[in-house]
Length: 310
Image (tube, rainbow, N blue to C red; front, side, top):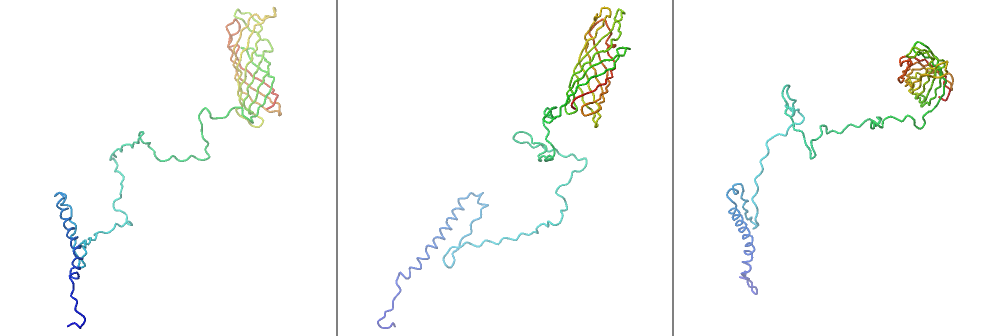
C-alpha cells in the first residue's frame, strides 16, 4: 500500500512509446540501405556483375547504429628482398660474340632531320691557343706602326761577258729597306768600254749597251754583321752598234732584261755595307742585224758599296 497522501503514479503512454520511437529511425535507415544495395546489384549487367563484389551488409549493433563488417586480413607477402651487396650471376649486358653480326640500329631523327652522330659537347679549346681567322685575313701587313724603314744608295761595278768578250759596266742602285729584310728599289748600269761585235754581213762595229729596271730583294739569313740575300732586276734597255768613222749608231735594238742575283752583304760600319753578288743576265732583243740573244746574255759579278740608313 502506498502511504497516505501519496498515490502511486502509473506510467503514462508517452513514457512507454518514447524509447520505441527513438529506435525506429535507425532500423528504417538500415533497411533502406540494404534495399538500395539490392537494386544496384540488379541494375548492373551480368558480365560486369561477375567482377563486382557486393558491399558488405551492415548489421545493427546493440546500440542501434549500423556498422560495416570487418575486412579480412591481408595475407603476408612471401619473399625475401634481393641482396644488392652480392654480384649478379649474369651481368645485365654482355658483349656480342665474335663473328655474330650486330643488328643495325636506325638513326635517330629529329623534327628537322637526322640527329648528329656525336651528341656530346665539344671539348673546350686550350685557352692559350689563338683563334684562327679566315685565310685572307691571316698574317700581318708588311709595313705597320713601329716598322723599321731604311734606305741606301750604292755605286755598282759589274763584270760581265758578251760572248767571249769580257766587259765592265758601271751603274747605281737605290732601294728602300723594310724591317731590315725586304728591299724595293731601282738600278741601272751601262757598258763602260765598247766591245767589238759583228753584224750579220760580217762587218765589225763597237757595241754599246745599257739597261735599267726595278729591283726586288730579300735577306734569307742574317747573322750579326753578315747577311745572305737573293734578288733580281727586271727591266729593259737598248743595244747599239757604233761606227767609229761616222761616230754614230748605225744599228740599234731594244731588249728585255731579267737578272737574278745571289749576294753577300757585310756591314762595315753602321752606315756602310759591302755587297758581293753573282748572277746571270737574260736578254731578249728585238729582231735586228746585230749580236744574237745568246751573246747579249751572260754571267755577271757585282761589287757594290751601299751607303745609307739600315
